[in-house]
Length: 257
Image (cartoon, rainbow, N blue to C red):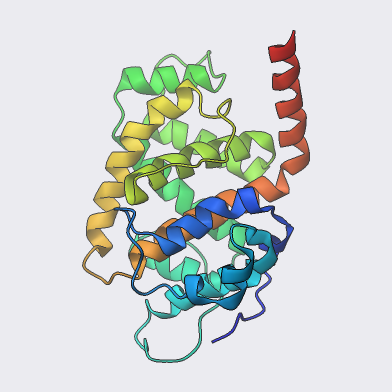
């Protein structure tokens, strides 16, 4: 099986090895840190030659995602992977996410994140919601509801930019901690502020509840769901790289003062 040209995964070729490291780890290892018996990346000649210089074999990494995606469908014996968008939509179906199949990949990814976030917000107490509102700069809201906060986060996602990236980091970090036992190692610690602490617990509860819907559906979902979350995070990282670098430079300058 070989990598299928996929416009939704081509951006992986713009990432450096450090940025790809978490994605490679979850492809190879399960939640207990053991090697997945279904993974084929570590026997690939390019992996053997270049690892841990992951950027040298990004297509093989993408191919592995397509391979696991193929294993989630009825015909698990076909010798071909499936495009990322098809994997994303399959994950959304399993997690009962509302989306339009003709929508853009990015919009469907946002719908997936909003499904997780919405369930997390519904688990939060009024005091937690108020604290969260304050953390994201909404001081004028007295007692925000989960519905109001969901609308606010949806607007932030649609607007894009660094704020959207921050929320993506927080959600992805909490989800990955729950699903694979470790969060994002590359994301700047300055992004994982009190807002992350406020959301991590409820997001963990939300994804655990969602997980019960698909846990018996097959082991491939234990790869494709966290892999999709990783891809969503990495896409946002790639799209906001310039602003992220500016923020990081400001943080470094403050430390040096």
